[in-house]
Image (cartoon, rainbow, N blue to C red; front, side):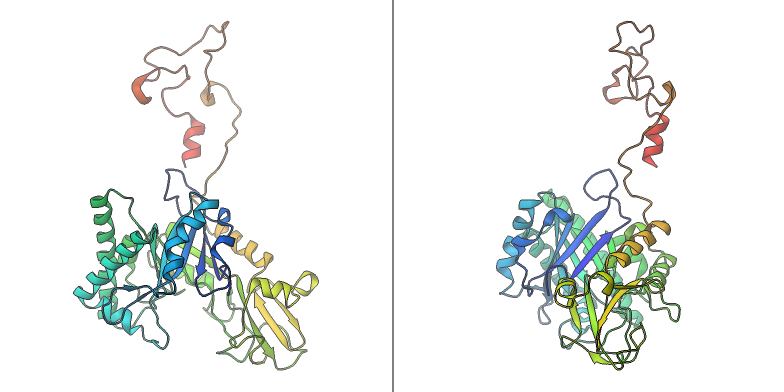
Length: 400
């Protein structure tokens, strides 16, 4: 799979690097893929995550596979060549192959000494390899109350350690982000809200050809027949108390191919016999477009689920194309998730109450304001000739 395995749009988070508010666009690069880091057009993104680091099940410290270390050492430097302001994160994958119960993660989280080892090593590794933040992926909530309480303690301790390390080292605090299940369930919400800069809702993998015998919208924005949808999940997170400005909408640049049971039955929900094309049906966006011929009139759009799909004979592929992506971005706007987006320019027509300039350069003007008390609230208390003593109405409108 290529580096665009996961593409995230942070649609409603204030900028973490300046006082202004802006969109954040982040992508994830997987070291096991075939796409060289040097080929990434980092100018498209504000943040780039490296996958993956792991938790050592014996020491509970952060573990880096030897084969990945050379990539980690150069990752930030390479992506910053094209985009010097890009922010990089190190993604920690908490679930090892075969560990369906997240036993390594919970073994670490439930013991104070184990938590300390993990937290300390994660901060050290992030600094050592030049990352600007840490991304925890993708622990699922548990019905065990004790486990959830300890998870909350881990998150709080992690944030405290990051802030302390920043203060002691005079470096900017590391970012701390969480990739979570689409439903909040029993997650320790207060700890998540306090500790993480944002939460990436894993709004995909809802329906997979390895698990279901019918075609499905694996990243459905809506689902009229169930609660398995992004819309339902985001509303649940917000109702549980997570601010919209901390929610990231995940967009997966990957599709899934099913083998249809009947070629004539080719809608969402049609009978299928399992994966097609690959062993699990997963296909990068590039392959869907170039190798499978999903282009032009062959690409169909389902308004109900908000997803695209195409089919050829018995092969049916569901994925997000232009229509689905555009609609999901509009969804964020329409639901107030974009309340902090930057307004790049405000044009105002009016008289002196909205005047942004002054008359100092007009030699024949009889009215000037280049003397006290004008400017007493400006930096240095110096009159500038501006016809106000602070913000004008356009300034205040722009700040809202």
